[in-house]
Image 1 (cartoon, rainbow, N blue to C red):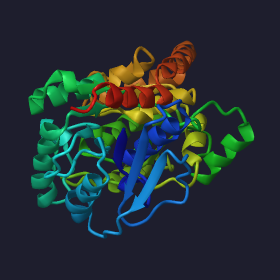
Image 2 (cartoon, helix red, strand yellow):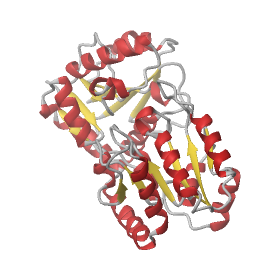
Image 3 (cartoon, rainbow, N blue to C red):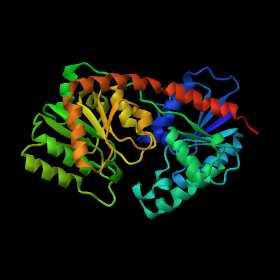
Length: 379
Protein backbone atom coordinates (compact mmCIF):
# COMPACT_ATOMS: atom_id res chain seq x y z
CA UNK A 1 0.00 0.00 0.00
CA UNK A 2 1.12 3.55 -0.78
CA UNK A 3 0.08 6.51 1.33
CA UNK A 4 0.73 9.88 -0.24
CA UNK A 5 1.00 12.82 2.17
CA UNK A 6 0.59 16.53 1.59
CA UNK A 7 3.73 17.61 3.48
CA UNK A 8 3.92 21.31 2.59
CA UNK A 9 2.97 22.29 6.17
CA UNK A 10 6.39 21.00 7.24
CA UNK A 11 8.04 23.77 5.25
CA UNK A 12 8.98 27.09 6.83
CA UNK A 13 7.82 28.05 10.32
CA UNK A 14 5.53 25.26 11.50
CA UNK A 15 2.08 26.01 12.79
CA UNK A 16 -0.29 23.55 14.45
CA UNK A 17 -0.86 21.48 11.31
CA UNK A 18 2.88 21.15 10.74
CA UNK A 19 3.51 20.07 14.33
CA UNK A 20 0.65 17.56 14.07
CA UNK A 21 2.11 16.04 10.92
CA UNK A 22 5.69 15.90 12.14
CA UNK A 23 4.58 14.00 15.25
CA UNK A 24 2.63 11.51 13.15
CA UNK A 25 5.63 10.96 10.88
CA UNK A 26 8.09 10.57 13.76
CA UNK A 27 5.88 7.95 15.36
CA UNK A 28 5.06 6.14 12.14
CA UNK A 29 8.79 5.95 11.58
CA UNK A 30 9.15 4.07 14.88
CA UNK A 31 6.16 1.75 14.51
CA UNK A 32 6.42 -1.82 13.28
CA UNK A 33 4.56 -1.21 10.03
CA UNK A 34 3.69 -3.75 7.30
CA UNK A 35 6.55 -4.50 4.91
CA UNK A 36 4.46 -3.60 1.87
CA UNK A 37 3.54 -0.15 3.21
CA UNK A 38 5.32 2.94 1.94
CA UNK A 39 4.79 6.66 2.32
CA UNK A 40 5.38 9.42 -0.22
CA UNK A 41 5.78 12.94 1.14
CA UNK A 42 4.99 15.73 -1.34
CA UNK A 43 6.66 19.10 -0.70
CA UNK A 44 5.84 22.39 -2.37
CA UNK A 45 9.00 24.53 -2.32
CA UNK A 46 11.63 22.81 -0.17
CA UNK A 47 12.35 19.61 1.72
CA UNK A 48 13.17 20.54 5.34
CA UNK A 49 16.50 19.20 6.53
CA UNK A 50 15.15 18.00 9.88
CA UNK A 51 12.80 15.42 8.32
CA UNK A 52 14.91 12.34 9.05
CA UNK A 53 12.90 9.22 8.21
CA UNK A 54 13.56 5.65 7.10
CA UNK A 55 13.56 4.50 3.50
CA UNK A 56 9.87 3.69 3.91
CA UNK A 57 9.33 7.42 3.39
CA UNK A 58 10.02 8.90 -0.05
CA UNK A 59 10.33 12.67 -0.33
CA UNK A 60 9.31 14.42 -3.52
CA UNK A 61 9.73 18.12 -4.25
CA UNK A 62 7.18 19.50 -6.69
CA UNK A 63 8.78 22.97 -6.89
CA UNK A 64 5.53 24.92 -7.13
CA UNK A 65 5.46 28.37 -5.57
CA UNK A 66 1.68 28.88 -5.48
CA UNK A 67 -0.25 27.23 -2.66
CA UNK A 68 -3.35 26.88 -4.82
CA UNK A 69 -1.46 25.34 -7.75
CA UNK A 70 0.34 22.95 -5.42
CA UNK A 71 -2.87 21.83 -3.72
CA UNK A 72 -5.22 21.56 -6.68
CA UNK A 73 -2.84 20.77 -9.56
CA UNK A 74 0.63 19.58 -8.59
CA UNK A 75 -0.33 17.41 -5.61
CA UNK A 76 -3.17 15.44 -7.26
CA UNK A 77 -1.13 15.05 -10.44
CA UNK A 78 1.82 13.58 -8.52
CA UNK A 79 -0.42 11.34 -6.40
CA UNK A 80 -2.14 9.99 -9.51
CA UNK A 81 1.19 9.36 -11.22
CA UNK A 82 2.51 7.48 -8.18
CA UNK A 83 -0.74 5.48 -7.92
CA UNK A 84 -1.11 6.09 -4.20
CA UNK A 85 -3.87 4.22 -2.42
CA UNK A 86 -4.55 7.08 0.01
CA UNK A 87 -3.82 10.77 -0.22
CA UNK A 88 -3.57 12.09 3.34
CA UNK A 89 -4.21 15.83 3.69
CA UNK A 90 -3.49 16.94 7.29
CA UNK A 91 -4.81 20.50 7.08
CA UNK A 92 -8.51 21.16 6.41
CA UNK A 93 -8.65 20.96 2.61
CA UNK A 94 -7.82 18.48 -0.14
CA UNK A 95 -7.49 18.73 -3.94
CA UNK A 96 -11.03 19.37 -5.10
CA UNK A 97 -10.71 17.52 -8.43
CA UNK A 98 -8.73 14.52 -7.18
CA UNK A 99 -10.54 11.25 -7.87
CA UNK A 100 -8.54 8.94 -5.60
CA UNK A 101 -9.10 8.05 -1.96
CA UNK A 102 -8.65 11.00 0.40
CA UNK A 103 -8.02 11.00 4.16
CA UNK A 104 -8.52 14.46 5.65
CA UNK A 105 -7.72 15.99 9.03
CA UNK A 106 -10.15 18.62 10.30
CA UNK A 107 -8.76 20.11 13.50
CA UNK A 108 -11.88 22.20 14.02
CA UNK A 109 -14.55 23.76 11.85
CA UNK A 110 -15.13 27.01 13.71
CA UNK A 111 -15.28 28.79 10.33
CA UNK A 112 -18.35 26.69 9.51
CA UNK A 113 -19.96 26.23 12.91
CA UNK A 114 -19.37 29.75 14.26
CA UNK A 115 -18.09 32.03 11.49
CA UNK A 116 -18.74 35.02 13.74
CA UNK A 117 -15.99 33.76 16.08
CA UNK A 118 -13.43 33.10 13.35
CA UNK A 119 -10.70 35.56 12.42
CA UNK A 120 -11.04 35.91 8.65
CA UNK A 121 -7.77 37.14 7.03
CA UNK A 122 -9.65 38.25 3.92
CA UNK A 123 -12.98 37.99 2.12
CA UNK A 124 -11.44 35.32 -0.11
CA UNK A 125 -10.60 33.20 2.91
CA UNK A 126 -14.17 33.57 4.11
CA UNK A 127 -15.51 32.32 0.79
CA UNK A 128 -12.91 29.72 -0.16
CA UNK A 129 -12.07 28.08 3.18
CA UNK A 130 -15.70 27.30 3.99
CA UNK A 131 -16.42 26.10 0.48
CA UNK A 132 -13.28 24.01 -0.09
CA UNK A 133 -13.32 22.51 3.40
CA UNK A 134 -16.90 21.33 2.94
CA UNK A 135 -16.14 19.92 -0.52
CA UNK A 136 -13.05 18.19 0.89
CA UNK A 137 -15.04 16.67 3.75
CA UNK A 138 -17.65 15.36 1.30
CA UNK A 139 -14.97 13.81 -0.94
CA UNK A 140 -12.91 12.29 1.89
CA UNK A 141 -13.34 8.60 2.67
CA UNK A 142 -11.83 9.15 6.13
CA UNK A 143 -11.83 12.25 8.34
CA UNK A 144 -9.66 12.61 11.45
CA UNK A 145 -10.59 15.02 14.24
CA UNK A 146 -8.61 15.82 17.44
CA UNK A 147 -11.56 15.51 19.84
CA UNK A 148 -14.99 13.95 20.10
CA UNK A 149 -16.43 17.46 20.18
CA UNK A 150 -14.88 18.22 16.78
CA UNK A 151 -16.05 14.87 15.47
CA UNK A 152 -19.64 15.71 16.37
CA UNK A 153 -19.28 19.18 14.83
CA UNK A 154 -18.14 17.66 11.53
CA UNK A 155 -21.00 15.16 11.53
CA UNK A 156 -23.53 17.89 12.36
CA UNK A 157 -22.44 20.71 10.06
CA UNK A 158 -21.24 18.65 7.09
CA UNK A 159 -23.92 15.94 7.38
CA UNK A 160 -21.11 13.40 7.30
CA UNK A 161 -21.44 9.64 7.76
CA UNK A 162 -20.30 9.07 11.38
CA UNK A 163 -18.60 5.82 10.36
CA UNK A 164 -15.95 7.70 8.40
CA UNK A 165 -15.06 10.25 11.11
CA UNK A 166 -12.39 9.17 13.61
CA UNK A 167 -11.33 10.87 16.84
CA UNK A 168 -7.55 10.74 17.25
CA UNK A 169 -6.65 12.75 20.34
CA UNK A 170 -3.58 14.96 20.09
CA UNK A 171 -0.80 15.09 22.68
CA UNK A 172 2.06 17.22 23.95
CA UNK A 173 5.59 16.97 22.66
CA UNK A 174 8.06 15.16 24.91
CA UNK A 175 9.65 18.48 25.90
CA UNK A 176 6.59 19.44 27.96
CA UNK A 177 7.42 18.08 31.41
CA UNK A 178 8.29 19.14 34.93
CA UNK A 179 11.48 21.19 35.34
CA UNK A 180 12.77 21.59 38.88
CA UNK A 181 15.88 23.66 38.12
CA UNK A 182 15.04 26.89 39.97
CA UNK A 183 17.98 28.68 38.38
CA UNK A 184 16.57 28.06 34.90
CA UNK A 185 13.11 29.14 35.99
CA UNK A 186 14.40 32.36 37.55
CA UNK A 187 16.38 33.07 34.40
CA UNK A 188 13.37 32.68 32.10
CA UNK A 189 11.30 34.95 34.32
CA UNK A 190 14.00 37.58 34.15
CA UNK A 191 14.13 37.31 30.36
CA UNK A 192 10.43 38.20 30.13
CA UNK A 193 10.58 40.90 32.87
CA UNK A 194 8.71 38.86 35.44
CA UNK A 195 9.86 39.94 38.89
CA UNK A 196 8.34 37.26 41.11
CA UNK A 197 5.16 35.25 40.55
CA UNK A 198 2.92 35.33 37.48
CA UNK A 199 -0.03 33.90 35.61
CA UNK A 200 0.33 33.08 31.93
CA UNK A 201 -1.74 33.27 28.76
CA UNK A 202 -0.27 31.75 25.60
CA UNK A 203 -1.71 31.71 22.08
CA UNK A 204 -3.01 33.92 19.32
CA UNK A 205 -5.29 36.62 20.68
CA UNK A 206 -8.79 36.24 19.27
CA UNK A 207 -12.03 37.84 20.44
CA UNK A 208 -13.34 34.44 21.50
CA UNK A 209 -10.51 34.10 24.05
CA UNK A 210 -11.65 37.01 26.23
CA UNK A 211 -8.33 38.71 26.99
CA UNK A 212 -9.93 42.09 27.87
CA UNK A 213 -12.11 40.45 30.52
CA UNK A 214 -9.14 38.45 31.82
CA UNK A 215 -6.94 41.55 32.09
CA UNK A 216 -9.69 43.43 33.94
CA UNK A 217 -10.23 40.43 36.22
CA UNK A 218 -6.53 40.31 37.04
CA UNK A 219 -6.60 44.02 37.81
CA UNK A 220 -9.23 43.39 40.51
CA UNK A 221 -6.86 41.16 42.50
CA UNK A 222 -3.55 42.80 41.55
CA UNK A 223 -3.81 45.43 44.28
CA UNK A 224 -3.95 42.70 46.91
CA UNK A 225 -1.57 40.24 45.24
CA UNK A 226 1.15 42.77 44.52
CA UNK A 227 3.81 40.10 43.93
CA UNK A 228 1.97 38.73 40.88
CA UNK A 229 2.13 39.76 37.22
CA UNK A 230 0.17 38.61 34.18
CA UNK A 231 2.28 37.61 31.16
CA UNK A 232 0.42 37.45 27.84
CA UNK A 233 2.19 35.81 24.90
CA UNK A 234 0.56 36.02 21.48
CA UNK A 235 -0.13 38.21 18.48
CA UNK A 236 -3.28 40.33 18.53
CA UNK A 237 -5.60 39.04 15.79
CA UNK A 238 -8.81 40.47 17.23
CA UNK A 239 -11.50 41.43 14.70
CA UNK A 240 -13.23 43.75 15.36
CA UNK A 241 -9.94 45.10 16.66
CA UNK A 242 -9.45 45.38 20.41
CA UNK A 243 -6.56 47.55 21.59
CA UNK A 244 -5.04 45.02 23.98
CA UNK A 245 -1.82 46.98 24.46
CA UNK A 246 -3.81 50.15 25.15
CA UNK A 247 -5.80 48.34 27.83
CA UNK A 248 -2.60 46.95 29.35
CA UNK A 249 -1.14 50.44 29.50
CA UNK A 250 -4.23 51.79 31.27
CA UNK A 251 -4.21 48.96 33.82
CA UNK A 252 -0.51 49.36 34.54
CA UNK A 253 -0.91 53.11 35.01
CA UNK A 254 -3.74 52.62 37.49
CA UNK A 255 -1.79 49.98 39.40
CA UNK A 256 1.39 52.06 39.19
CA UNK A 257 3.49 49.05 38.19
CA UNK A 258 4.19 46.72 35.26
CA UNK A 259 1.50 44.30 36.36
CA UNK A 260 0.53 43.10 32.87
CA UNK A 261 3.18 42.20 30.29
CA UNK A 262 2.74 41.37 26.61
CA UNK A 263 5.05 39.61 24.16
CA UNK A 264 4.15 38.73 20.58
CA UNK A 265 6.54 35.78 20.32
CA UNK A 266 8.60 33.35 22.34
CA UNK A 267 12.06 32.29 21.31
CA UNK A 268 13.43 28.76 21.21
CA UNK A 269 12.15 26.40 23.89
CA UNK A 270 11.15 29.18 26.27
CA UNK A 271 7.54 28.00 26.36
CA UNK A 272 8.27 24.87 28.40
CA UNK A 273 10.25 26.91 30.91
CA UNK A 274 7.52 29.56 31.14
CA UNK A 275 4.85 26.94 31.77
CA UNK A 276 6.99 25.54 34.58
CA UNK A 277 7.73 28.96 36.02
CA UNK A 278 4.10 30.16 35.90
CA UNK A 279 1.85 29.89 38.93
CA UNK A 280 -1.16 29.23 36.70
CA UNK A 281 -2.31 29.27 33.08
CA UNK A 282 -5.49 31.14 32.27
CA UNK A 283 -6.96 30.16 28.93
CA UNK A 284 -10.60 31.02 28.35
CA UNK A 285 -12.28 30.36 25.03
CA UNK A 286 -15.73 30.12 23.49
CA UNK A 287 -14.66 27.52 20.90
CA UNK A 288 -11.65 25.23 20.44
CA UNK A 289 -11.16 22.06 18.47
CA UNK A 290 -8.75 20.74 21.10
CA UNK A 291 -7.06 23.31 23.37
CA UNK A 292 -3.41 22.23 23.38
CA UNK A 293 -2.10 24.94 25.78
CA UNK A 294 -4.28 23.45 28.53
CA UNK A 295 -2.64 20.04 28.06
CA UNK A 296 0.86 21.52 27.77
CA UNK A 297 0.45 23.46 31.02
CA UNK A 298 -0.80 20.40 32.91
CA UNK A 299 2.15 18.37 31.60
CA UNK A 300 4.43 20.98 33.18
CA UNK A 301 2.65 20.85 36.54
CA UNK A 302 0.90 24.20 36.13
CA UNK A 303 -2.66 24.67 37.45
CA UNK A 304 -5.12 25.70 34.75
CA UNK A 305 -8.07 28.10 34.73
CA UNK A 306 -10.21 27.53 31.64
CA UNK A 307 -13.71 27.16 30.15
CA UNK A 308 -16.06 24.12 30.26
CA UNK A 309 -16.89 24.71 26.60
CA UNK A 310 -16.44 22.81 23.33
CA UNK A 311 -13.50 20.35 23.45
CA UNK A 312 -11.78 21.75 26.53
CA UNK A 313 -13.41 19.45 29.12
CA UNK A 314 -12.16 16.46 27.09
CA UNK A 315 -8.64 17.80 27.49
CA UNK A 316 -8.73 19.09 31.07
CA UNK A 317 -11.09 16.57 32.67
CA UNK A 318 -11.45 17.34 36.38
CA UNK A 319 -7.98 18.92 36.48
CA UNK A 320 -8.90 22.60 36.06
CA UNK A 321 -10.77 25.51 37.57
CA UNK A 322 -13.67 26.15 35.20
CA UNK A 323 -15.11 29.60 34.51
CA UNK A 324 -18.78 29.22 33.61
CA UNK A 325 -19.18 32.68 32.03
CA UNK A 326 -16.19 33.92 30.03
CA UNK A 327 -17.58 37.47 30.09
CA UNK A 328 -18.06 37.65 33.86
CA UNK A 329 -15.12 39.64 35.20
CA UNK A 330 -16.01 38.93 38.82
CA UNK A 331 -16.15 35.18 38.26
CA UNK A 332 -12.85 35.21 36.36
CA UNK A 333 -11.25 37.26 39.12
CA UNK A 334 -12.47 34.86 41.79
CA UNK A 335 -11.18 31.90 39.80
CA UNK A 336 -7.72 33.45 39.40
CA UNK A 337 -7.55 34.37 43.08
CA UNK A 338 -8.57 30.89 44.19
CA UNK A 339 -6.11 29.27 41.81
CA UNK A 340 -3.26 31.33 43.21
CA UNK A 341 -4.01 31.29 46.93
CA UNK A 342 -5.67 27.95 47.78
CA UNK A 343 -2.62 25.71 48.22
CA UNK A 344 -4.61 22.50 48.74
CA UNK A 345 -6.55 23.14 45.55
CA UNK A 346 -3.38 23.99 43.66
CA UNK A 347 -1.69 20.73 44.64
CA UNK A 348 -4.80 18.76 43.78
CA UNK A 349 -4.95 20.36 40.34
CA UNK A 350 -1.25 19.70 39.74
CA UNK A 351 -1.57 16.01 40.68
CA UNK A 352 -4.74 15.50 38.67
CA UNK A 353 -3.27 17.33 35.70
CA UNK A 354 -0.15 15.15 35.62
CA UNK A 355 -2.43 12.09 35.67
CA UNK A 356 -4.74 13.51 33.01
CA UNK A 357 -1.96 14.08 30.47
CA UNK A 358 -1.08 10.38 30.56
CA UNK A 359 -4.28 9.75 28.58
CA UNK A 360 -2.79 11.56 25.58
CA UNK A 361 -0.02 10.11 23.46
CA UNK A 362 1.37 10.88 20.02
CA UNK A 363 2.19 7.19 19.64
CA UNK A 364 -1.46 6.31 20.25
CA UNK A 365 -2.63 9.06 17.89
CA UNK A 366 -0.26 7.83 15.17
CA UNK A 367 -1.26 4.19 15.64
CA UNK A 368 -4.99 4.98 15.51
CA UNK A 369 -4.51 7.10 12.39
CA UNK A 370 -2.52 4.40 10.64
CA UNK A 371 -4.95 1.67 11.70
CA UNK A 372 -7.84 3.60 10.17
CA UNK A 373 -5.97 3.94 6.88
CA UNK A 374 -5.03 0.26 6.79
CA UNK A 375 -8.32 -1.19 8.04
CA UNK A 376 -10.63 0.90 5.88
CA UNK A 377 -9.01 -0.71 2.90
CA UNK A 378 -9.03 0.47 -0.69
CA UNK A 379 -12.10 -0.33 -2.73
